[in-house]
Amino acid sequence: MSSIHLEPDQLPDPANHNEGKTPAAWATNSGIVVGAIVGGVGFMIPSFAVVWAGAALVVAALIGGAVLRGLGYGQPIKK
Image 1 (cartoon, rainbow, N blue to C red):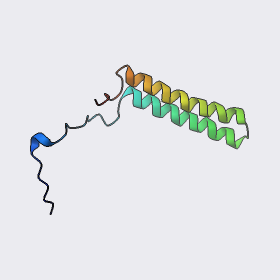
Image 2: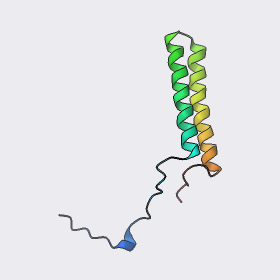
Image 3: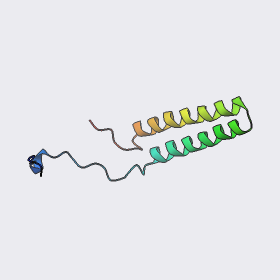
């Protein structure tokens, strides 16, 4: 048994319950998956240009997700 006792006013605020189901999350994850598939195809056909194109898609998806989150389409940033 723990000897720690917290009062209700000492607990943190509950987290958002959207579980990442936001346009920013969907766009980011979809872009990463497409980039990984393109990069994988580049490895199979050995073409470094296609591999780098897949990597560029992943980076673009990460940047796009950050921009969408900043525009309010993602989970709010905790202060």
